[in-house]
Length: 622
Image (cartoon, rainbow, N blue to C red; front, side, top):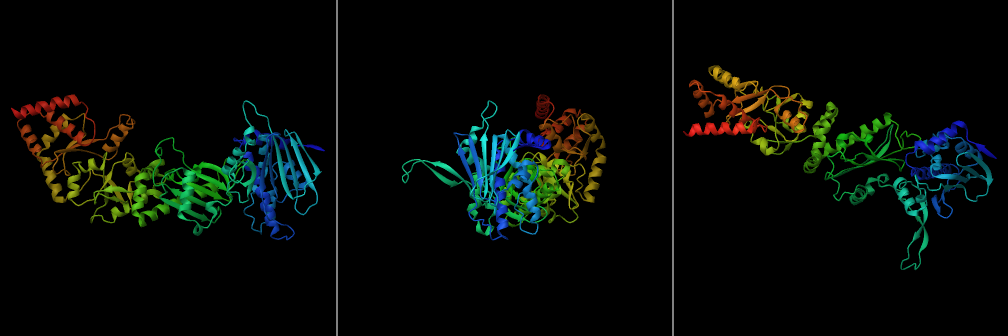
């Protein structure tokens, strides 16, 4: 007798077939997973009931192109009429979940309790469905039939072997959607490899085999399509390095061996196994918007999602790999993860593992870590800076910078381990390259004084230092900071005297440059260079330069201070010119433009700069 689905079930069925699943390919994954579930149940029952034999488990796929039929069968626990009514007649019942509750004391963790309603995804591709099933230790078999999701019938049937056979009559092709590809063995093989490759039972299919020396004619052969045992489920002691490398090459299409492989298992409130890889080379598009990141997610060996960026922080987006968890709360379609504490817990745990792995590499294999940092260090810097430094504490000890100390990479920890006595700041200098930073006028005296300087050559570095602010109580300070305060008391007294004696000269120069600088001062940091530009607290010269390059300066400028070296012959010449009441406008502007060029900043009017320089040269040669 034909029965109608209940009103609520009809509504849900319509959603299942038309809304919840965005990809019709998913139906095969669902049916195979249900078959695997049935085999799991049979296996667990056989552990306590010797009358139940769970030998030679299988899942089989058969294709009948002529009749547009696709069949998925298994020799699992099977269903009787009550099971068919409960699990298929009333949608949203989960036989697996009830079974799991009954086996709380048994090892039932691998039963997929959340997937009971996935069967109805088959209505996306099928106009008619039959389920023929015989339950273990029962004599009768039963047939469940439904057509166009209008209703269903359950009747007695004949079946020798226990288990379930699901037969789908595929819909006819239309302009909008083609269903015939699901009758192609190569397409089915691809879907099995993508979604169900690591189901632990053999998924078999009769495939066409081309003629060879042994078989002169083409023939059909029953083959196992899936790999069954995923690499990450194997014991690490049984896996060779080349096995990991082969897996990486095959799955991530990288010609270079991974720099580091991370394979581990976590037991807890959310248990999972992870197989992660740190590449040795950044992909060509890594630092572009086109690059997609995230880990592949499996649940009990069943593919759930690719590029799951919710599993790992953006700062570790270079990590490739997968996560397989038995404990995830998945929604009805298994396509979208519930945003709950489990996902946050997974992400936190994976981030922690990646960080600890990198820290160990930094300490124990410095050469490899520096190779990694050259490829992905910029990512760590952006990660520490972004979102107002949300991840700075996690990343700060992984950062490296070239340093004036032997021109090698150093960490902040290494820097502060060799501070000069009484040094309370970590000094850094910014520039387009290490070579240009070394030529900065401000570098000479600070290096002569024995201080170490970090070389910052990436655009993000200046922003990063402002976000970090300090490391273990030592403040980051640019050598362009006006208040560098490196001189001794004796040197301070000398500079104060020099400034007082030349107060009028400094005021005249300041007046000549009133639209350009905030102040003109005697320098405490110059050695052989005549002038340099520095800035007060706030927006730095280097940050202003970066903002201009990014076209985001919005008219903002650093407070520029022109410093003059009192020991340079130029200063003596300026004093003489001032005493002779000469107009110092050209000299002041030329010094300022010179300081801009040294700092890597644009001069306002190159043409005027050239004319001014020519006039002064002519005067000097007359």
